[in-house]
Image 1 (cartoon, rainbow, N blue to C red):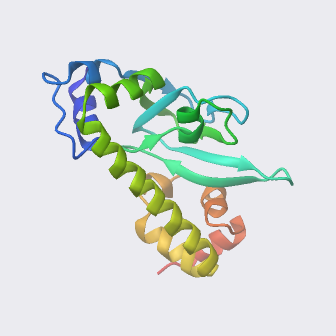
Image 2 (cartoon, one colour):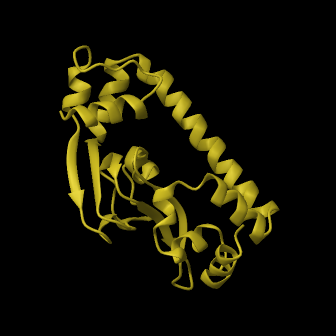
Image 3 (cartoon, rainbow, N blue to C red):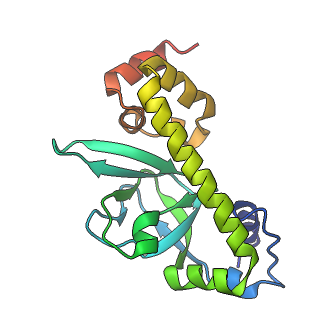
Length: 193
């Protein structure tokens, strides 16, 4: 495995003390894939087969509403996890689309490998609890923001924590994520201090 990929995985899987010499099965299981822009990693109705760590690129998870409009649920980008996690874990058809917004390089593993780590490495239980708690808290915070903040507050909060990779994607995705029109997002961006 490439040295940069080892460092990426060690960073993403903190606080685990993973070393290639001590955990060779973990590092050998990852497969690198490159996908072009606007490629579907998962389409609604299909089952997510992979758990990803993003080397580079931006992906979005979205749903199509009853009117046929895209509603962005989230993003993944350099150094983050990616995938449709509920479909992956439950092996059930996804309600969501996972699409690359930029050319992307990802590391991926299968469900079998993912599950085996919890059996082979006891420290993965702790990692799993921490990551799942962070996901849950992040989801709750997002829901609270959507129902308690007005458009300006949502925009300002998002822009303060927005990683640089997301600032380079088309505004329509960011507007959808913030539950506002692209025109409102554009106006707020122009007036940003």
